[in-house]
Image (cartoon, rainbow, N blue to C red; front, side, top):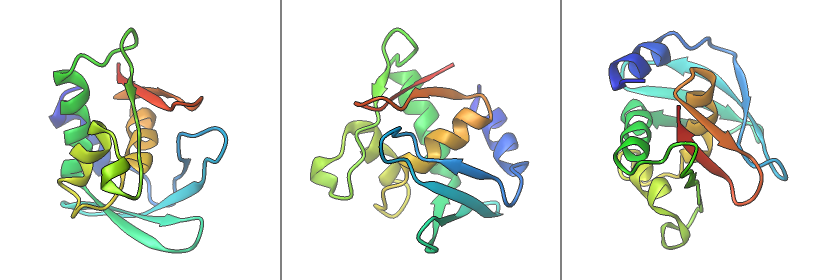
Amino acid sequence: MTNQEIDAAITNLEIGSAFFTPDQAVGAQFTITDVTPDRVQIQLDSGNEMGIARQAFLSTNDFLRNNGHDLRRPCPIASNNDPDGSGPLCLATRAVNDNVRCINYIVPILAHIGAVSFSGARPNRCWYV
């Protein structure tokens, strides 16, 4: 998908849609609570809310495509609350999201709209489709 197609699909995300983070062992549910021109707001299963910059979704697409991460060469998601323990994809999305870890929420949303696919087996990996 192009970034324009992804941006249009994000605009049409349904408020109240629920997703699970990618890790099959410890995946957590989250729900979309708002979509604005700049952010996708989600509520975590803890009840806390967080925003994800729309640019972070496009950065994910760019990173996967620019680095050739297709089904034959999947990319480790490698998320971590500590930037020093985060992988390159996690860091790329944090860089446009106020240094807040968000890749765990981006991947299932992008999978829902058909831009990426992922494996929840460890190590969690994703790729563009």
